Every structure is written in C-alpha cells, then in structure tokens.
Image (cartoon, rainbow over all chains, first blue to last red):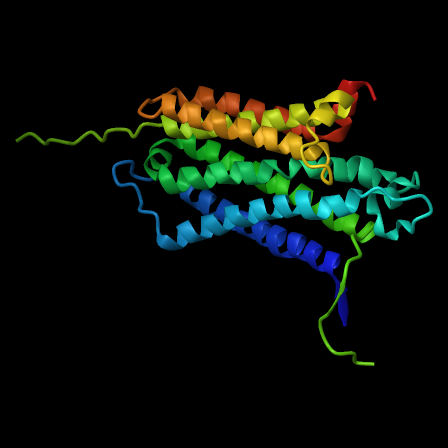
Length: 188
Length: 114
C-alpha cells in the first residue's frame, strides 16, 4: 500500500489541519453560543482555564497551518504550468481548465477557495485573542459577545466553503506525484 | 440602615474594538486585492512575491500585514478607551461582508466586466 508524497501532504493539509480546524471551530462556536446565552456577571470575569488556552492555541495553529500549507506547498503543485504534451493528470489546474465541463472547478471553485480560506484564520485569531485576553470586556457587553460570535460564525462558514471546495476539487483532479511512500507491505 | 452596593467598573472595550475593526479591515483588503490583482496584470505581477504561488502570495501577505499593522495602531490608540461598540461592530461587519463578497468570483467578475 503506497501513497505519493504530494498525496500525503495534501491529506495532512485537508484532513489533519483543515479537518481539525473545522471541528475545533465548531466546538468554539458551541462554547461561544453557550457563554453568550446567559448573562455573565461583569464584575467576576470567568477565569480562562488552561485547557481553553490550549484549545484556542491549537485552533489558531491548525487554521494557519491549513492556509499556509495550502498556499505555499499544495497550490504550487496544483497550478504548475504543464509543458506541451505533458500528461495533465499531474497538472490539476490545466487538467480542469482543458475542458469546458470541468473548467468551473478551477475558475469558480479554486478561485473562491484560495481567497475566502484566509478569512477563517484571521477571524478566528481575533476571536481567540478576545476570549483569552479580554474576557472581562466580553463578559461585560452583549454587543461584544454577539460581534465575536458573528465573526466566529463567519470564520466557520469561510473554512467550510474552502474545505468543501478543496475536497471536491481534489476528487475531480487530485494533486499527485512525488516520491512513493510505502505505508504497508503488499497484501498481493 | 443603608445598603451600599459597589457599581462595577466597566472594562475598557477599546482593545476589543481594535481587534474587531482591524479584522474586518483585513478581510476587506483581502477582497479588494483579490479582485484588483485579477483585473490588473501589473498589480498581479507586483503581488507575485513567491512565484510558485503567484499573485495569491502578495494578496495574502499584504492583507495580513495591513491587518496586523491596523490592529497594532488601533490597539495603541484605544488601549484604555471605551467606545460605542455597536458602531464599531457595524463598521467591522460591513467591511467583513464586503470582503466576503469580493472573494466571490462572480461578483469580482461583475466588477471587472468579465
């Protein structure tokens, strides 16, 4: 059982970083909704638990890891210029653009994904920073809580759009190539 | 017998306002640069900071840099201030919404007349 280096990195980008980020962001949204629904006492700001600090740190780290690995490792493989006569299977952008029935996966899907993805880590970094560093201001004002919740929801939406398109595009024209990595012995 | 009650001092919301507004601004800049780089070959070339990634590298690096600079400046200016947060929030959401809209390819194409 083998996997190529590019396939492995793409899996790490989408399933480890992107997947964990989406799950963690959804968890953060639930936490924020729960905390926003009651009326916290502004005089006694709830302390930030250590697990929350770690959770938000991992949330931000995986969000940035997802967009940075996507833009600087996988996207160059995706958009590499295909030489004349080359097998387009390892040039996903050109493979998709070569046919009008598949061109939309790039012209619409990838064009949208590659930009909207960045809104997610930017917004969630802000959300985490407010929750960890300015809990008192968050507790004290309902408008602050609603604003932060709104940005967290937009971060989730952006990440879901980017992740969804990424998964579909990679199914239509997978990023392939690089050295083969043996995962398990052959089962014949 | 009189009952004394301590009135809680409201924590300054300036730093939070700075974070929220700068985030909206950063998302807006991202959208503007994405459309502008698509419409201008010269700008796309100027934003091609890392050739394998293409103009996307410059679009995102510039947007993130401006977001962080804006955040630092506003945080310094509003460190101990209490602002009308509803107004700040409305502006931030407007910028965020515009940023989201500008990243949507059909809207960008419409603006550029493609």
